[in-house]
Structures are given as structure tokens and as C-alpha cells.
Length: 110
Picture 1 (tube, rainbow, N blue to C red):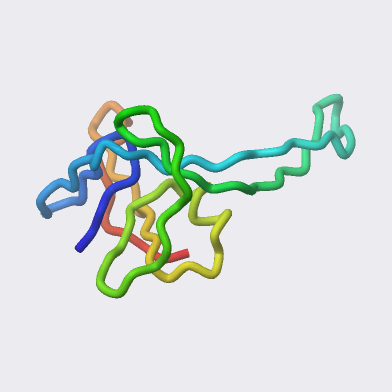
Picture 2: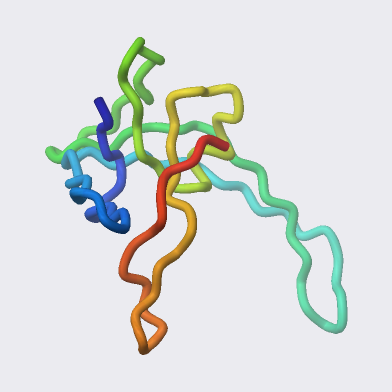
């Protein structure tokens, strides 16, 4: 079973869409200024505290791994939880003639 913890429909080419569950995975981010290159700030990004914002706006801990359950999440959430084997992210962007993203080619583990 795949549960979407993303706020939008996940559209995979030639497959049924994965509807949002109503719950959304979120990750905290800390940015630290580490320098400048050509006048542009360079930041170090640290990810922590992955939680789930429920449809009722309650913040809950991210669910534990459970046999047979997979979650679609953002790349940032998956990067914050690198040891998890149950997280899937959309890969292979599919675009229309105007360049708008219309879906993806599949899901991947990070």
C-alpha cells in the first residue's frame, strides 16, 4: 500500500494517480551562511525534525516503518530520513509542450 504524504496528486505516466491522504510530511530546515561566491551567499542546509501535519492541522511524529506500507514524500523529507526504506519520491519529470510539469515517470527510493 502506498500512502501519499504530499499535498498534491502524484501523477505517474500511464498509471492511476496517487491521491493525497490529507496528511503532509514536513521537515525543519536550518540554513547557515558559510561564505560568498561572486557576491552570492552560500548556505549550509541541515534537515531535522520530520513531522506530519494532519488534515486537522495537528502536528504528529512521522510514522514508524511498517511492513507493506510505503509513503510518497518530497525529496527533502526523504533526504532527512536517509535510512528509511519505505519512502518514495517522484522521479523523471514529465512536461507538456509549454514546459509545465504534468507528472513523473515513476517513484524511487533515495
